[in-house]
Length: 59
Image (cartoon, rainbow, N blue to C red; front, side, top):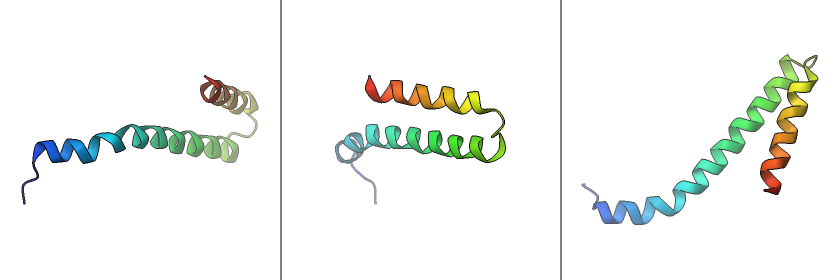
């Protein structure tokens, strides 16, 4: 079955921005968990990531 291009764009386009946002958050949290697990002595890295995350939420 070949999907019509117009149909594909209509379905896909509204979902795409949310997919990007959620994939960003997923990567961020995985990175945060990874940092806590393996580099707990490098606390400033986690702190910087958390501050950057807060900055992105509020702006």
